[in-house]
Image (tube, rainbow over all chains, first blue to last red; front, side, top):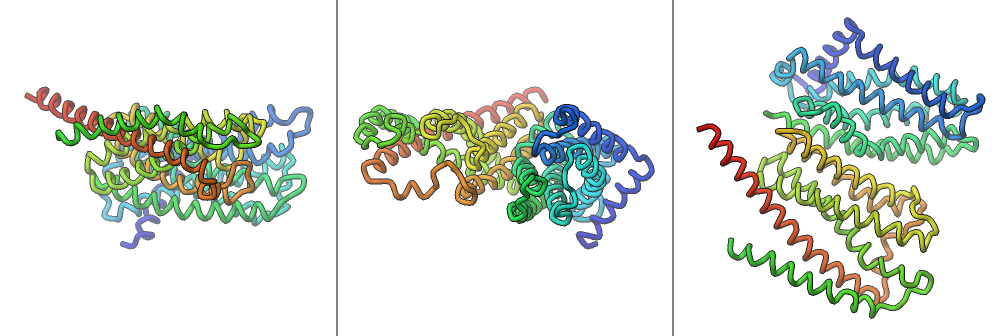
Length: 226
Length: 222
């Protein structure tokens, strides 16, 4: 079976489980929204948001809700004792990783589809200024975050105190991606927009995505072999 | 083994001698006109910063070897290099602001090189946290962190040239005047000898610890 064919089977399995239980989608969306609301209380005094807060709030909410979803994605396999079955599946190891990544990306993009309008509304962010560039930054940033996240969530699944260790490992490694995302979206949202800077951030995010995906595939295949 | 036993003390003695002489060597360098005495931090700050980068790369390569081949020795080297990266990070991040307050007028600035050095320090601290609290099997996980951390290292080096920045460019080093270059090289060699000795000692300690643990497990089985 091809690499992507196997990945699609794993991703479809996750979609199916999710459609039946709706556990992750409800909890992640609810958490993301309440996260933004807390920020709105802090950063929108008297109806006027603090300048340039929108991009930071958006990315922090994405990172937090992403971490929550990541923990859950593999915890479910562990609780259902399906981890061994997943590893014994007659597909390549890289397919398992890619399938999990696709399922997580779908969930995170869905969360962002809800988060972005809410942040735009509460923080007066001009979403329509460069919609394609904004979407590009969000997608490349999410891919960068999720590739590293899926790898470490998968490896941590059997470790002690994994709930604490996932963010401990994940945030330092993904800070460059989050900084670039904040910088790029901030440049779009600013009172004097700088689209060239946002384009630059997008190019560098693409570079990071390529590096992270390559490293993650190699590491996953080697670490998960026993 | 005996050669190895003599090698580390030799390294330590030579580097101690070089450090003892370092103040006199540094004193031969000319006074930098605008920063005066504070510029002398340079002779410790720069070698440590460069070696921090080198150590993170060593950790990355050793981690990759460990993941691919599972040689225990590679894991010990990775651990030693990661610990040293964190220690050097502390030195760099403490001497940097001391210099910055004098030359830029601020302790800290969120410019790319400072930020990325801090990120590297965080990454390798998380490596150590993972090893400490991850339980059995955490060496593999930590090795993955090491690989990812090391790929960030070149990014740290070039970031200064990519963005507009306060921090001096990396092209400063080759263009140093001779009287200043000598002391930098002197200090760099002293630090290299010291840290090589530290790594060798740490690897030996870790491999002894692992042997002891294996012996203990065998004893328990009987």
